[in-house]
Image (cartoon, rainbow, N blue to C red; front, side, top):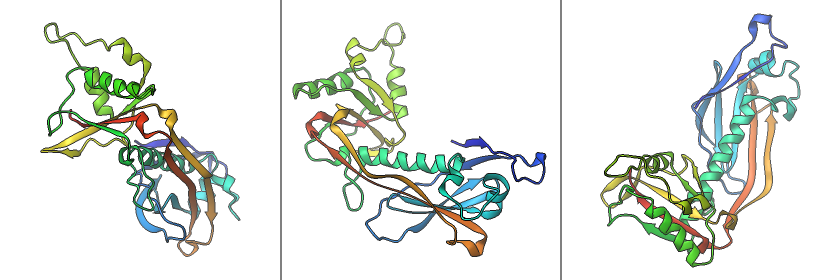
Length: 272
């Protein structure tokens, strides 16, 4: 996805210098222990300028050309307060990437330091494999109903399913065998919302199948995200000064916990 934002012409050479900034080639966000050095990672593109991303833990540093800041984002560039990018697409995009990584870790974090442990890898969570060893494609809504029943058997009320967009599309395309009419979801499924995210992979290996995914059914009030420090964006004016660039360091401190692992059921082996 490419994001765009119109930038004011204040400080531009002429009224014709108005530009539209966009970010492409998004980078990932990793996790780091205290005092670990941030290592170079991918690149982001801002207009015709490149933004180098260093990442470590939940810290992301983006470098941006000083000339671009002066001309289009912050024409009175000096000590570069944080508010200089408060309305810029760069700030919003970095925040979105960190949020996306938190989403991934909440679902599938490995628990191997320094990464937090997510639902999939928490002891006590019910894991229900579809198929007979190699996964299977859904042919009815029964797997969803059964997942809800498992939670209700433990006195937990499922509030939502989280799945890959591909999986949601597979359920939406279910048809009645004789008439080819689309199947109407059972009324019980209305008790739990269906949410999609591309942070649920679609290339997992189950048996001989390499295109499997997962479905998360849960009482999501039992998943806790603790944030000791909310998103902080700090300008690093001198970090890349010799290259005519300015850096921004973005970081948070967060942790993930399940208050009741039995309130979660992960369906695996979900094929298209």
